[in-house]
Image (cartoon, rainbow, N blue to C red; front, top):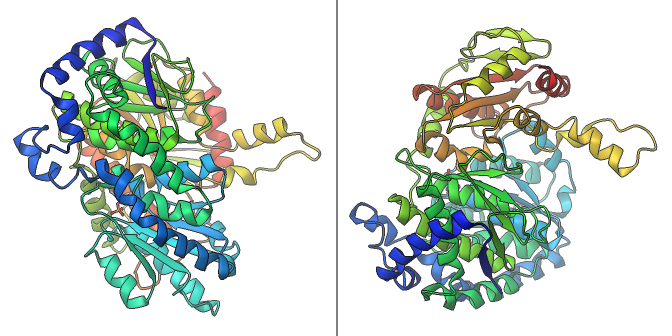
Length: 538
Ligand SMILES: O=P(O)(O)OC[C@H]1O[C@H](O)[C@H](O)[C@@H](O)[C@@H]1O
């Protein structure tokens, strides 16, 4: 059963004062019943078509026979390698569901040519590709579909029967699926991307990969009746803690899940909270994988452990629904519309404009430190100096964000000493992983340091970076492309698209006057090693 408990005095009092207000206004029951007027007049039209997630525990049951059929056909055809192409809300839930169920799923929410080539090279004849997109027009998803269609065809494999499309009714992707004869599962249009965990977006790829999705719906169904209550309502308890703490100045949300049986939930929460709340100069910044630094503006929420200010217990299906409900409440308390993402489009438009140019305007590096070129305004002339400069530039209430437009799996290519035990292997991977830069820089500041993979983060924390409080410092990492991947029917390659996405987002951040630099690795492995070494030099 789902339970939220406060483990710290400050949170308990901040939460109880806002919870009292919410209850007095009848909010818990109104939200559970799908009242679209809760977020004010400006948000009402959108809220009216965005509250379908509250009905999913029941509605998605109707999908179960469809999923059963899909799974049976895939098994009969020997399609055991499940690849999911989808961004943000169209892949993050499935990633958590499959990791928690310990069933293999390859998530492609990237334009990195190396990472995509890796997936392309694996068991093509046993591959079923799930193409998931609510809008049906997301460029990454479109590119990956084109690439797989060509690859299947070139290998003499018919794409129909190997491609499963999940999208909203009426989207361009629906049209394409119908024309090509792909399996098609239509999603509920009144569910926003980041609220779609328990819809076809979360369930189709997870069922194909072998997860027990009916159980998720049972778990969510069990907690649903509690969400209309004024007491003993875990959604209210969590929402009041998130919103109450943020209003009291604790607007950095550290997510602690190290001892949890649920694998990777913070990455899903990150998108839900950052994209829903980070707008109009307000918002809650989710911080994943970091230790608390006692700086007064943090709230630590721990999944299934006592290591936080708030403890959240419950099975995955219930967690999804309760976090969605809590986020909608936090949005109400912060007086923003939790269902839009007004600043996401900006980077996308920049990228499209850049791609229309004959050459990408990468500019000239301010300086070069070994295998690392540094672009952007900085007075330092080497990497240790640059890191010190960026850390110094973080405002008292701000954060540093590291955004790596790189291959997420490349660290596993690191050479491991012969006969190495597991610990030595993990050490070798860690020292080849750009994400380690987060931990190293975090040691040198008492401000939160976040890390995200590009372009995935553009559909998640990217909204907060641009729409939330303007107190971020941004460090972007890009890398040289050894072997690019053409996108059939498009004038760009994945490598060019990836760089245009990085430059497009950097442009949007620079327009806001935020400190932002781009580090380009001319040799990726050597570049990562240099970054990690430089971060340890004072
Ligand atoms: O599912 P799609 O339409 O492809 O959208 C994928 C993602 O794209 C956008 O960037 C939105 O901001 C996200 O909330 C969404 O999850």
